[in-house]
Amino acid sequence: MKIAIVGAGIVGVSTAYELAHDGHEVTVFEQRNAAAEEASFANAGLLAPHLLTPWGTPGLGTPLKLLGRRATLRLAEGFKGTDLAWLWRWRRAARRGASAAQLSTLESLARYSQRRLQHIAVQHELDFESSQGRLILLRTAQEQARWQPTLQVLRDAGIALREIDADAARQIEPGLCPETPLAGALHLPDAKAGNCRLFAQLLRQGTQAGGVHFAFGTRVARLTSQPLGVQVQGESGTRSFDAVVLCAGMASAALLRPLGPRLPMAAVHGYSVSAPLREALHAPVASVVDSQLQISITRLGQRVRIAGGAELGAPDAAHHAPTLQQLYRTLNDWFPGGALLSSGLQTWRGARPTLPDGAPVVGASGVPGLWLNTGHGAGGWALASGCARAVADLIGQRSPDISLEGLGIQRF
Image (cartoon, rainbow, N blue to C red):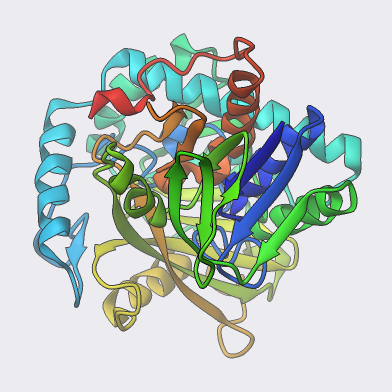
């Protein structure tokens, strides 16, 4: 089949790989001039388990706060009425809580995705600065209690998980500051992290060499259903395809709307700071997550990446200084002296295209020949390879090896 993919982030590039692997003729349209330049650029880097990543499922394990210094989600300059409408739906979904079935689906998909990603990396010898193991740091006994329902879902899914005390946590991550209060931690020995952008670029290079065409600097103005295809900005005609897969992050909702289906998606912006490694003995071995603050600290090769924060607002809104300061404070709380903060810093604010219930839309759109693989929120990196393989199977009229129950567009 002749297939178009809209979007060359980690989800789009992974989908291109799987479809080309199945023998299809694939063209990827991307408005930026390179792969992984938006949501995939400098994200936290955490892979499975998905449910234990900051903002993996909004409200899970962490109480929701909209006001004050430790607000879960803040309103930044440039937020719109549509953002407020999304916020209302998000709060309602968070209060209701995700069903056990949906949580199980997401976590199983993340594990499947990690296996698929690892298979691809080994097969093609892709070095993407990966590390293994994760600690969820719990500052108080109250945090330990809040996580219990989620831990049961993970245990039921077969996730390797240990609840450990502070001493055991510091043995696993020797660089943890002994003076910072720590009630205990959750240890996930099989969790992985890695450089999302690097993996996406390596995968793009391989697929491009294998025949996938990447149309960079090319903005898709609209999707068409008769004939099925895309209309590129500045072109009067339609480029026709046998199938189109929409992997365009925040642009997905706007492109889909004229055809009927509606996606209640919002850009939940987060921050990251990537700093050169200063002293390995004082830096993380792999990755840790501060459960209370929903901030992750991850070792990526010779750098340390601190990621967190969540806000609704314009894509070009000014960086929120207090959020960045909180990232620096959290790094200093746990790993003082581990990273060089005086030079070589990369500060990034990027969108997480998020649906109110925190789950992506993966599968048929309701428009013949148009498929969706979008809205992954904070889980794009964790879910990309599995979702891509599942969509490729569906397009090939095969049953995916993993359940996508509850991830369809009909839930809206």
